[in-house]
Image 1: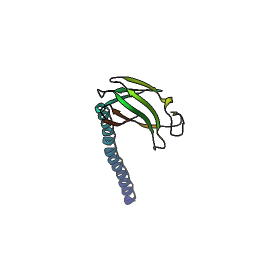
Image 2: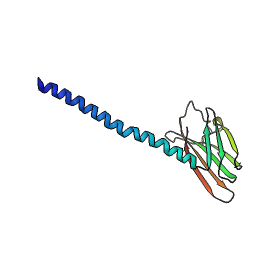
Image 3: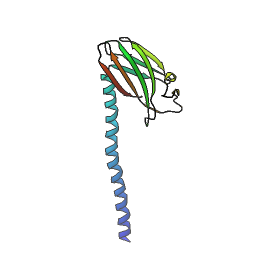
Image 4: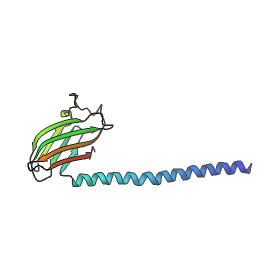
Length: 138
């Protein structure tokens, strides 16, 4: 009888230790991932603010940008939804509706159908410097 009770106690302790170890590994990883994304956003030459149906792109590079392609990258990377702009002036805030983005086959972007993971922006300056920035959606 005593051995049965001891086995039950050991199993409970083993489960508790397993849960505590997993929590000790997961909680720091969650905290670090968001800090890296915030640091990348702060150092970026482009600012992005996402609202429910609009996003605002800000040119913080100090020079006008040409050949600007903004892409919404969905989870799983099925197809990117893109929008092209010829030029964004210095310190210009560009308001873009998420409904303006289209897939390669012309399919419009919809938050009801696709879950976005990140926003990717490719641009170049008049001097030829290239920017390739990918920032998280939220």
